[in-house]
Image 1: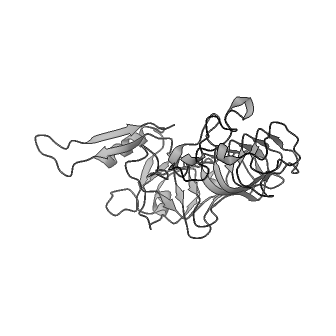
Image 2: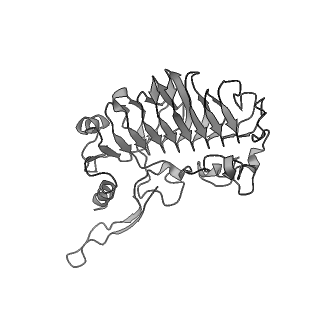
Image 3: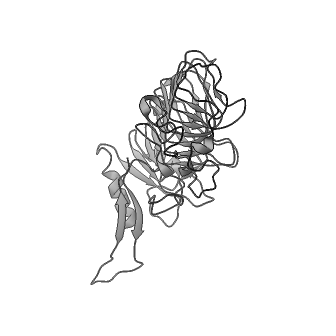
Length: 336
């Protein structure tokens, strides 16, 4: 009953012309497919694949996307924040490649994990990568490869973003936590706003605003020497450099910026990066908005909860009766 209700809610969210499929590698769950390859093969362009959480040491492995799909997992840090999902397990993958034939693909709520380098490689245009986790036990990287455009990377908890080949134009990177750095080719361009980044943003011909660079040291900088950038309303833990824009703030004490910068106040892994209401980042962005990943028109969403209705609590008795049936109590919320 619980599984049926989840599927019905999700089906009502998307257009009726496309099909929805359920993927689960839990043997106890009756789903359409148990492997990503099988679900991908059955889905037509424009379909949606809902990916169930996996056990701690299970994974859907390496996914290759060759057609336009919407892929939705349950999110991450599900035990750490309130009212997330009734099931607290993540949909784990080692890696994903979105081939050029899969233009328009959207990926939400997945947990990319491996003991070494994990990656999601985007080779297609008009792709959305949102509310995913790329950060544990290795260099977990979002790669932008080839001549692509109109890629949206928002509200992720990630380690690095790299444009390591080709020209990536009109790239929109906003409201992410980046635990290391962002590096782009000199032929690429985009908008980089309202991110929290540890070390640096190296890009060209781009708008770079309302970010917080929280690390310390000589490498902590938005490189004003890279040509064509508009750099404004950013906060730096280190030196400002030579940008000369008075809206940028250098040598900011990050313990005054975030509610739990040291990570010892009991906040969730992603919740600790929320701003102190009276701190130096509050209202310091362009037009008075907050800097950082929780500022702007589309703030970071705790636990990467995907933009579909979700069941966050379900009470399902083990048995019922002919008289009373099977009383099921479900609590659900919509999610923007």
